[in-house]
Length: 80
Image 1 (cartoon, helix red, strand yellow):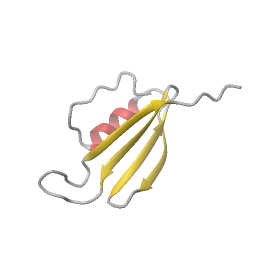
Image 2 (cartoon, rainbow, N blue to C red; image 1 turned 90 degrees about the vertical axis):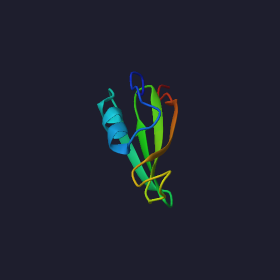
Image 3 (cartoon, rainbow, N blue to C red; image 1 turned 120 degrees about the horizontal axis):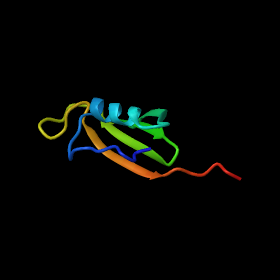
């Protein structure tokens, strides 16, 4: 899924969401409140992605909607 998704060192959540949504076979499978952050979980054919987005204002370093972290790992095969 994240193959071909190029990101700058810092990115706003709307921009990252647009890039993930444009990836082939990308699917948002969960949105989870993490107490001050919201985790968005995506799954694709080759990889899974977890994005933590700040849900509170912490000026000047972190604003509401800033991406805190992105984790990418290989998708689990569903073949028998």
